[in-house]
Image (cartoon, rainbow, N blue to C red; front, top):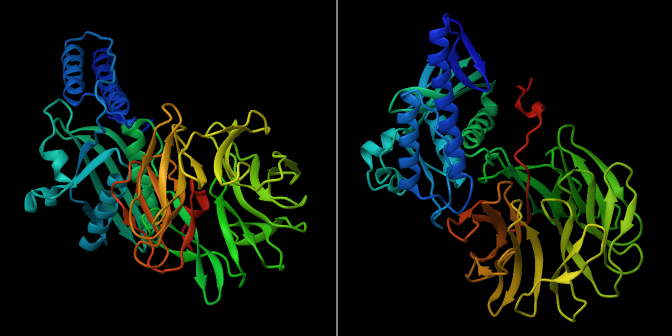
Length: 484
């Protein structure tokens, strides 16, 4: 029988009409299962877990009997629920070692847990450590027709790696999704990140965040340079060597460029670096300060702060022509612009009322309104990619802390409450996590946390790290290629 791969669903080309009818039912069941799982896991407000499995069980029984039943899922609780997924031991081929196989599973385990929608647990872990935190979800999972598992197979030949990833219904042994990833040993993490993101997309219909990166500034000798790392703090590398003060990095939506402020010419100019060739070019080098760039979601515009006309105002630059247009017109200081995910609005900080407060305006500069926040000092707004929350920094008696403002309910939630200052919040591309800088351990480093302030992770240990900027999950194809 001939294997055909369509949209990563594996099925067999039937030889008869009867086989075709049976296969259509199986494919429909697979597609429906993934569709239901996507609907179940996509939102923070989880669906009723037992109700979901009861609905799915009814559908599968009806489908096996030949009936087609319309199924609707609705939100019944406000509980955030992860989908339990078992990670089976990696199968080894050719020159692949046990250590390599363990690395594949460990990276995948970390990626899926960080996705915030999957409760990954390793088969070996469930046998040896039944008290592990990640097993809390799996051991208490409801019974149902679908029990998710991931089987990985890794091959190593002359430093070339092939990873075969399968998303399985381990109850039936049915393959729900399958894909192959090829690269070199130095690209192992990226290949596994790609697998993790594809699993998340299969289950939720949304893009994963494992391939995303975080740019930040850190001290090198007596200057500040731009560094980039994976979302979890791994693979840190310096990308600028301008031997000057470099600040406020911001990613392009396609992940190819980073825009930042550099004092290379002695003036705070707006500079862009193309990461693939490492080429640096000036975007704005008029007299005055040009800082806090923020790329629009459609990749066409860059919002920034500039004093080119004498006062700190919000401007928008055309990413192609470099033409600059002024949005704000006020003698006060306007700063820290951040785009809404639709690109129709910009949130920013202004002290036009005497103290720094947060305002929203249309992308053309009209319809200005203030967020109804308490406190006398609110700054550094960052709009969630989901559009539902705006993170910001507020001055507290012991320093600065991070809060979120719910755009729909106008509810304010405090996320950090620790010694030192917590600043520079930025969102992961899926809107589930925040990266920020903190001096909670005495010196400034980069941390990440869930959208509700839980699961805090320290990402850097340099002591001079500030201004994190989280990229999209897009990675240029060149990064998957083997280096010569």
